[in-house]
Figure 1 (cartoon, rainbow, N blue to C red):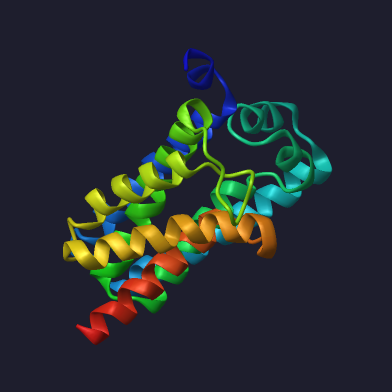
Figure 2 (spheres, rainbow, N blue to C red; figure 1 turned 90 degrees about the horizontal axis):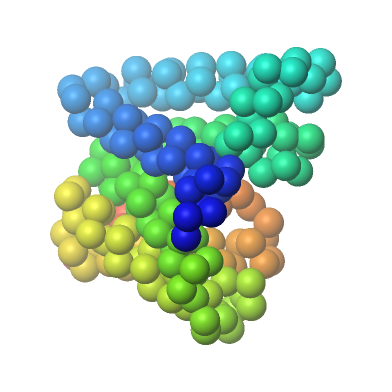
Length: 200
C-alpha cells in the first residue's frame, strides 16, 4: 500500500478528488448553472491549449509536473487527458441533469472510482465476468463508497443504483467502448438516477 501513495496513481486520484469536491461545493454555493457551464468550458479550452502546447513543445517543467500525476502514455500522447475528461464529465453532468443528480454523479466519480481502484488493486481477488481486468471487490467498494456520498443529494435507492451502474459501466467501457471513465462514470450514473427519479 505504501508504494501506491508514492506513485502517480495516487497523485492523479488525489488531484481529481480535490477538483471534484471543489466543483460540488461550488455548485451548491449559490452559483447558477450558466456560470458553472461557462467556468467548465473555459477550463476545458485552457486545458486543451496547454495539452497541445505540452505535446509539441515539451517544456521541461510542465512535462515534469505532468509526469507526477498522469499515466506515462498520456503524458506522451494526450497531456492532461485525465483532468480534461474529468472536467468534460462534470460539464455534461451539470448540463444534462438536475443540480442534485449532477452533484451526486460527480461524487460517485470522485469517491467511488478511487475506492474501486485501491481496493481492487490491493485486495481484489475475483475477476468480473464482463472484464477480466477488473476485480469484483473493487467494484463493490466503489459502489458502496459512491452510494454513501451520493446520498448527500439523492435518496438511498437512487444513489445505490446510480453508483452501481456507474461502477459497472467503468468495467464495460474499458473493455468494449474505450471511453474515458472520468466521462463515462458520471454520465451513466446521472442518467440512471434521472430515469429512476422520473419513475418514482
